[in-house]
Amino acid sequence: MFKPNTKGYVYAIVFVFLWIVISSFEYGNFRFGRILHPLLWIVLGVVGIRLIRNKRYKPIRVKLVILFGIYFFITCWFLFSSVFCRSEEGRIVYVNKKNRSNTIICRRYSCFLTTNDCEYFNSWTVTGDLRWTRKLYSNEFDTTKWERFNDASKNKYFINK
Image (tube, rainbow, N blue to C red; front, side):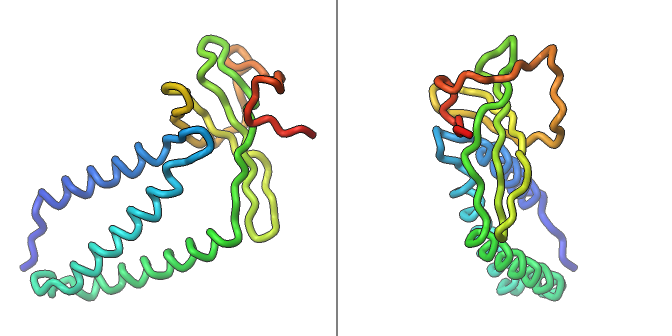
């Protein structure tokens, strides 16, 4: 009978943790997720192929083949979307009143010739141009903590309308 080892679970947890943490960093206009996501996705595919070819995993080979088929279809969707979808760099909309390095950025995402409204991201400046950015799923902001950012000369994301 097949018994998974705990070392594999630890590797998987560390892998997912690094994927989430490192992909949220940005340096200037460069997002680490643009390189890291495809790289880790390819590594995941290589690991899947090695598991399918390993004789030790023969009892769960059917499940692995089904998972690899799902992986293949998701990969095709990501490749198709990478050709037809783009995200703009955005602009600073709100600044935290207590910590000026904590900002909210508005980015528009267009896909298949349609454009959606602003997607809001909370961005913290770590040092210099290095920022930690995460997506916000709410577009209501507490005005006691945030103030509207209107200074176009200090906004490197400013889009002149």
